Length: 470
Ligand code: CA
Image (cartoon, rainbow, N blue to C red; front, top):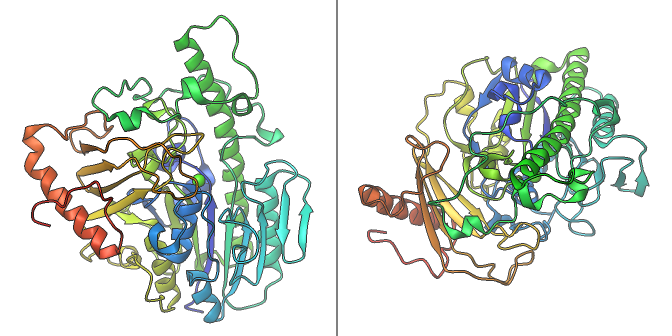
């Protein structure tokens, strides 16, 4: 038996962990994703280091943070020649493919590299009859994107003979504008439970967070909703109507994803490869599903920061308890390479968590560093911030400055801090930054964040004073 696993990564776009039944969803079930978790492991604290589509994809591929790979916002395209886990696998003899939503820029220098086969959507792509780009040019594929992307991936694998392969199956779903397959048009019509923080009044939160144009009640468009709200509703009634309408389509898109995850699993079993395949299901970041009254992501708050990640590899990873250790999307590249026995590129900045899948005994990191760069973009108005999360605390510095980076707005605002105690306040409703009883902890966290920035080669914003002791 080969010790080199096949690598199959199914990555979706904006699928929150709390819309996966393996993670305890109360709004839907996802039996085929759950099956991977049951055959392998579920990560409960996997975090995006920049909760936005293109930057997360670049971090996953390159094993580096946004300030190193250069993909800080949605409009800073990747230099696709940089080393990735895929380039390392290819050099080691793997056959490699990228199918679906690339979304890190199109054109020379930005199209996928290091893949034997690539076939991708243009920018955000379409749900219905999508346009694909491959080495021979553009074409339209009739049908529903989630089904087509799976078809193309399985067709490619079917052409391979013995020897390991790496297939990246990257879906558009369930990204905005949440267009479901006609097959699921009638699902989820019962009232969908509201999250407990739907009515968050942001009382202790910074004004930076309040500025975001991500409110279910106010910022979903007619394209998102597909139909205008009934007339005569109160503000509150209309907010609830919009929540239901948004969630119906979001969950229908997820239902297609789950079915197509099952198609991949069944296919691998039929080929006799399931046990020797490192099969990952994940999303590029989390998503607010009405949490804090929002949709979208971007913020360092839990629902957006947390990435669902389940994986199976039965011949070398025993099923077990969910993994609570904090890992990040920057860690995946080195983890995959370690599983394949291939050396990682020295510029990679993560930490393989392969050991957690073996004995689970290694000392882990104290905290994770986060930075959202796309300040004040025209649609979402989310503020630039960075922060540091430990197992218990989360410190956030809203520096509120686009720094001239493409994709950012020109508005700047005074910097603000937030601090949350995740043990006493897991929903992050009480900013305790100015609470005297947290003063010592807060200053320690500032030092830890400063040091982590230095270690990673990122620069604190000029407005942030150097913490005492750093
Ligand atoms: Ca995304």
